Image (cartoon, rainbow, N blue to C red):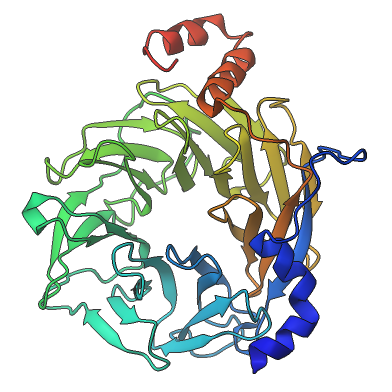
Length: 423
């Protein structure tokens, strides 16, 4: 009944969200201006003034969005956490509401079992719940006896298993203590430490780091925080870890507790690392040094640097439908880049209406919408308007755009071409 009533208000924007109402490709007033049009805002009284920790679209249902929230900023009890399941059929009221005793740090859906949702918490716990139940139905839960983690899990991800795990999905996490764990999806839910990061010593390849003048150089912890965890899209045993020191570690599940290679990507924490959906040898990173950088595997020098204002870039994402379009968030601004046109400034910039600092951004699976979240608990769903039509050969256009941007750097362009196809 609530969804039927909501249709009276959101019917027009719901048609645009599902693709029922599309623009006419033969219209005379067609303009490619890359603008964003706000469809609706997911806001609820229970999540007001709660920072959004993470949100994920369901892989089985394109209209279901899971959002994890932290503790309320003005609350005396900082341990409370909240998880809401939103649906596009009723944008004004959540379909599910789950409360926990600790703040949520990250969430992720299972691919093979779409009703299962993995949740990481600030106290180091990991839970798997069944969202088909209205009340909290915990399927698996970590315990201190089998899981030694006691710091926030910044990344919680489902990875498809190999022969060792009977080809079943397993959960991999990275926490503030610089450790990467593998949780076996069994009755004991046992955690195995597969990687441990150590602080950078000396000079690494990549971006130069700032030298700080301190009286006593005594680190609080030997391990940097593992903020970003990404599995390689084509090599199943390779994964990348980004630390709060700005270093990217290339690791393998075959070699435990040691990394294969590392380079300095940012002069500060790394907040995002995303592989290109069209060229798996390209990936982007964004961090606290005001920049979004595009890298090629095998090179420790950034190909393209995207920067706007003197503020940290909290999130950056590739468009799943146009290979040269990138979206990132800086403070309260949403920037749309098209490296095919220009790299010195974004093609479109819009400011969030609330003025709150944005913390996360992501495209929908079809690339027609962009979702952003802020520290006040609001989740904004924007429709991508005035986007150019996708080229026939996405990979070719992306590589040509990078070559064009590197015309003033002939030495770097020569190194890129030496990597072989597709460069």
